[in-house]
Amino acid sequence: MTTDAKALIEKLHDLWNTGDLSRIPEIYDAAFVAHMPKGWSCSEFIGYDGVRHAVSRIRSAFPDWHERVENLIEGQGKVVTRYVSTGTHAGPFIGLSATGGVSQLMKFRFIAWSMAALPNNGA
Image (cartoon, rainbow, N blue to C red; front, top):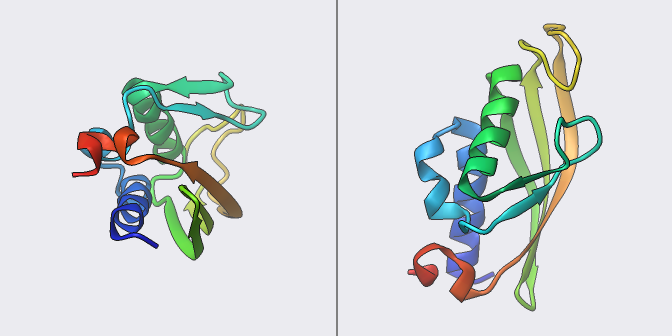
């Protein structure tokens, strides 16, 4: 894996782990579009405001949200991570009241990038 791609992926997971919204421009492109799973109030989040909303929404429902990367595979301008997300359901989320239970989800994140699309052109 290239150092730039690996560093970007580490920053991305750290942002979701910490909820530090000030780091969004370091990690996401202003034209970023996220396609969300069923149950979210909207099917996509666009740009910095969209990322801000998605992170805030997850972390308000699961304040101790944590993503642990299990595998990271890179090749031909793409990265796939397999990671486990955990968090205590402490606030409303997708129509469900807080349960106080701990949720654990195994997910995959697929990212295609080009150096031109990285914030600051990968610098």
